[in-house]
Length: 248
Image (cartoon, rainbow, N blue to C red):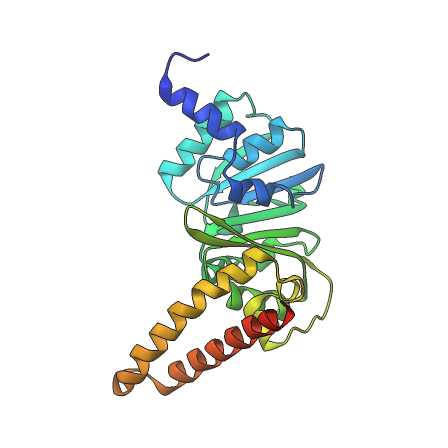
């Protein structure tokens, strides 16, 4: 065992991923060459490599502190030959020689993930699996995926440390069309309606109703289109939950 308690904690973190990252890990194909963008300490890549799930990896960071943290994790686990830690913005860390087959972007806003994918499209071969874990902003991210020919293969909701997280897995397939409600809720989640999914929307409905009430009282200070959009969301969520109530 290491003498340094901090080193002990780091090794435990590398071996025992958070529930959120464990769920992300399940969507990484065996033998993948994975690029993890915004890898923080590199825990996901280290864990997957030590488990023998991935063949090689690139850890991408745009800030120096997490970049050095990821370098340290990789070096201390003796994985420097198979995990390359690079300092660059977004998908700029990826080189053609890497032969990347999967890309993970986790723990950032959906709009940020969308903007990274949009800005760096030249770095995408179109053959990669995208494993995305947005912190909010799922609707605009799904919109981008649809507009660029990516079909959503898997989705899930989980709750960890009082926060709701969503995971979206997509691959380019050619033209795909989702309805407005499918983009809002997630096409697969709308079909499955898991307990975690329904619990998320029960919580959000109360918040949205409260916000809409505030908007209505302060109508002059809030753009009408914003009120209309929120009114539609409240209606969609209310209808969704009412349908589930009738099944019971």
